[in-house]
Image 1 (cartoon, rainbow, N blue to C red):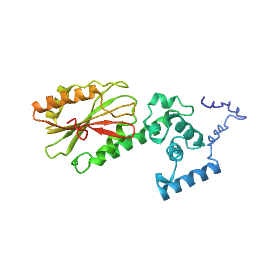
Image 2: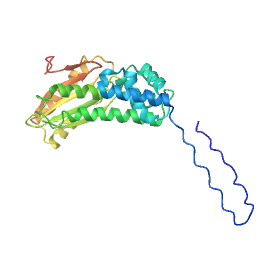
Image 3: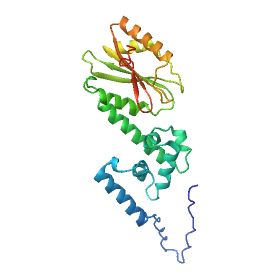
Image 4: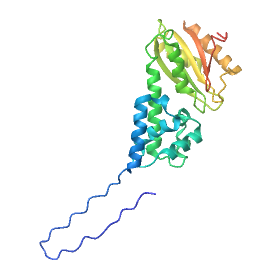
Length: 254
C-alpha cells in the first residue's frame, strides 16, 4: 500500500506583505549502514571471484539491489530460489508466476526479465553470423539458455547460408506443454526469402526429457521433404531438455 502524504495548511500571514512560508524539503529515506556494508561485501566478492564464487541467492541479491535500493533483499532472493529452484529458473519464470511471489513488484519483475534478455542476447551473439561447425558448442549453449527452462513448447529455425554461417534465428511458433504447431511450407518459404541454403530445427520439451516423440520425428521428415524439393538441406533437429539436448543427426534420425 503506497505511503500516504500528509498535507498541512500554511499559516495565515500576520501582515499583508508577509512572504509565503516555503514548504519543507521532502525527507529522503537513507539506506541503513548495515545494508550498505552487506551490499558492498557482495559486490567486492563478485568482482574478486565472479559468479562462481557466489551461491544462487547471493547472485540474485546483486540483481535485486537495483530494483529495491534501500531494503534487505536477501529474504526475497531466498523466497524466489525456493519457489523456482535456482537462479536460471527464477530468470526464466513467466511474469504472472513472478508477480505472484510476495515482494515481487513491477520493478523486480522488470529487472529479472532484463537480465534474462541480456543472457539470451549474449549467447545469441556468440553464434549469429558464424559458421556452425566451428561454434557448435556455443550454439548448443545458446539453445539451452534460450529454451531449456520454458514451460511451454517453442519452435525455432536456424537458417544457414551456403558456407554454413548462421544468418538468421527465428521463432516460428509457441504451443502448449506438449505440442507446438509447425508448418513446413512456411519454413521453406522463409528460407527462400532469406536466401538460405540449410536449416537447423530447434524445439524444447518442457517435461525436461528431450527424447523425440513420434510427432517430432514425423514433423521433422515433413520439413526435410519440403526443404529438399527447394534444394535446401536440413542439417539437424535439436530437442532441448532441462539439462541436455538430443541431436537427430547424432541419433541417426537424419
